[in-house]
Structure formats: structure tokens, C-alpha cells
Image (cartoon, rainbow, N blue to C red):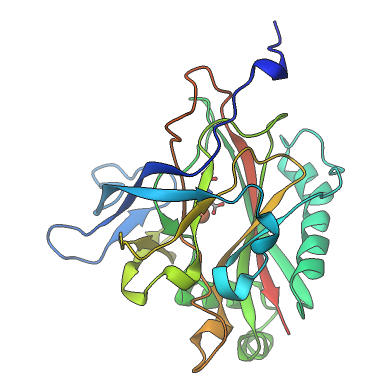
Length: 289
Ligand code: OGA
Ligand code: FE
């Protein structure tokens, strides 16, 4: 029997919750994790997590104060029209129907952006059979090094890559829930990039079976980080999560870090029978101005 939406419970308000932060390998070796299926005889990763309670502020009701990517590296977009994609179950259909909408959204919401190249997406569902679940580990998806590698991978040749790398280039994830109603469990927490210090960010080798090495970042706990979430997110809302902005590396730049640490978290007010969170994040290279 379908449960009436009036009986549903959406956890809201400022909250103290535990987030899992980076804890270095005991032997001080280079931190790594293996992408994809575990390699027999090898650990999935050589570093671990340390959990810290943090204050996470609910920005529901003050969404319009959070539209400054240069300051926070995250932004809230509301009232997005329904997608042409309905089921979000078929990758080719998602690329055909949803990617163009994401591209238009990014071009419209990032001043001066002139080119968007979408390079992948991840669907997450909370049920135990789902290939990908919410990630309960604070991270940034990309580092300066892996972003430059991405640009090279998607440029037509070396000369085109150098030209793109000489301009402003970023990676931005566009995150949205896929639940029918508002998100009831495992909301996403994100900290303002302006509250993150360089020493909080630890590059982690992301090793592929092919030998290719990408890089993600683990985040050390620091009490100066300012954490937020948007309670009860709905399907007509989007979060922009910026992973890298080349402008942030320039001396005297107005861009404060350019990267947003984020993690799903177990909201302490979530009911045991809450609907599992479902979401999609689309990852894009954004060029310009
Ligand atoms: C992301 C991400 C985790 C989640 O969008 O980059 O890490 O739980 N998402 O949705
Ligand atoms: Fe991420």
C-alpha cells in the first residue's frame, strides 16, 4: 500500500551530526584507493576515516543567500522545470535527455561560461542492491592535477588542450534527488570553500585496473569549516558542487579555494521507515570566461 505523503517525515533544521573525515595511513605512505571492483589481495584503500560531530546548518529558507560559487563553491538552484528524462534507469537515455538540460543550466547559471563538456554521471540509491549508495566520507571529487588530466582527455589534441588549460576551467557536479517527494534520509552536507584551508585537503591516488591514476581528495577535520545542508531537497532543485576552479590558483584571486568538500550524512532525526535517498550527480567540465 502506498504511504500517504502527509505521513512522511522530513528531517529539517540545524543539526549536529557525525561526518567521516580523512585519517592518514599509519605507515605514512601515499594514500590511495582502488576504483571499481576490489583487486584480490589488495586493500580497497590504505587510509581510514575518523568521525567527528559537526554543526550542520540548514539553509532551507535562505537558499537565495547561496548563489556565489566564487565564495562557497556550491550553489542552490530552484524551480527547475521537469526533465524530459523520466525514469533515470538507462544511461543512454539519461545522456540524450538529461545531459542537454544540465548543459543549459550550467551555461545559464555560471557567468561567462561558454563551453560545457559533460563526462559522466552517477546514480545513487540507498537500497542494498544498488550499485552506488550515498557516500558517507568527506571528499572533493577532483584535484588540480586530475582536473587538468580530464581537460587533456577531452580535448581534440594537445594544442587544443593547451589552449583550454590557458583559460578558466572548472569541474562542476550538478546534483539532484530522484525521489518522488522531498529527501527524507542521507541528505548531502557541504562546507563553504571559503572555510576550507589548504592543509585540510589531502590528494588521494585513485587507481584504475588499467594502470590509469586519477586523483581525489580526502578532507581533514578542522573546526573552522562551515557545514551546510538543504533539508528536504526536491526534484525541481539542483546543487552545484564545484570540485575545481583554475581561477582559485591565481595570486590575489577573488575565488576562495574553488573546491567544495561534501558527504552524505545520517541525519539524527531521520525515522527508521524513511524512504531511501535516490539521486543523480552529473559531472561537467566548464570553460570560460
Ligand atoms: C557527489 C557526491 C555523494 C552522495 O555528488 O560528488 O559525492 O551521497 N555525492 O550523493
Ligand atoms: Fe563527490
